[in-house]
Length: 260
Image (cartoon, rainbow, N blue to C red; front, side, top):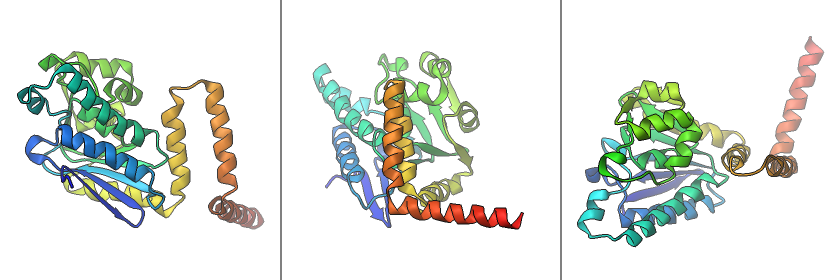
């Protein structure tokens, strides 16, 4: 089994860890296939209630391994095929009903931006850096960057990153909305797991459906989104989990009214 991405599942939490630190966790063909396969495995596993995406080494992810591609003599069709494989994994994670937290411990570059934004909630180290670099090597964005990046920070700021050779630090990433939280380096892993455990300790299925509705909504008509919202809340209302939580909420409300 490939060790380029590690997978462990513990008490409902699936931890997906990029593990090519010597290559800054850049994805080659083997790692891309592993990414796709894990995405399908984890999102279809009913025992998984939340996903934590992290990485080993000084960088979170440098995108695709262009050095390996160039040295292998990869032709355009082969490069497209690899992108399609990685895109399959990204789409599977993003459109799933599993909430995902990302722990960004280091640099994020190129397609790593898209892979990081596969997560719904990003916790970043104060030392994290974010950069495009596509045009610097004569390539165009892939791995969901042209969709996920402007959805996170807006079109104008996405274009700043893609059309200029700039690097933004963690504080700027937080200001722009690229990440949700910034912590000291030693606290990133712990805080990301706390976020995941919060989902798991509460109604993680409801959080997951909320994530799915937001993520898929941008590509559909308003009518379709409303129909999906109605069907989803109706489905949740029928669950034992929702029934118990609604009853507890109603009891607490009644008690508060009686004491006021």
